Image (tube, rainbow, N blue to C red; front, side, top):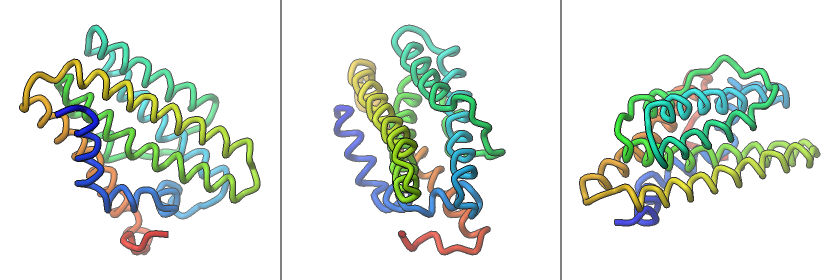
Length: 201
């Protein structure tokens, strides 16, 4: 297996989940139905703050190239956070990420995170485009580009780190579990809000 194979496998396995996470209902869930710019920014900041916490902890626990990659991921998220005040939000996805212990699992988990986060960034871009705020839309579009670059870096490190089927299986399982946790969070939140999570909009 290669990292490209892994990414394709995760996308295939979680096609429906990723499609729904790529709908505007993700922002609706993140803001608890408050689809206003300030609430959207706060929800986006909550995701970045959670990423900073997770990836900084990984960087402190790793060494060599993995430590550098995770430190870069944390720094990128921190840069996107800026001076924003994050919403008070916990994420199942980060609970899953925080439980990953081996380097290959964490690299796989990072890939899963990027697959979810890119979908969120696309919705943020679309929201602010619809708000006739092209500057903010461009900011989130650029952030999505950073996430794709991070996925590529994680893929390169997976290719050089994984040694045999067991490593690849562990990495893929971690990526799938992260996407599944994000989707479970999405479903639970929408159901709490009385919204059908299975209709994509």
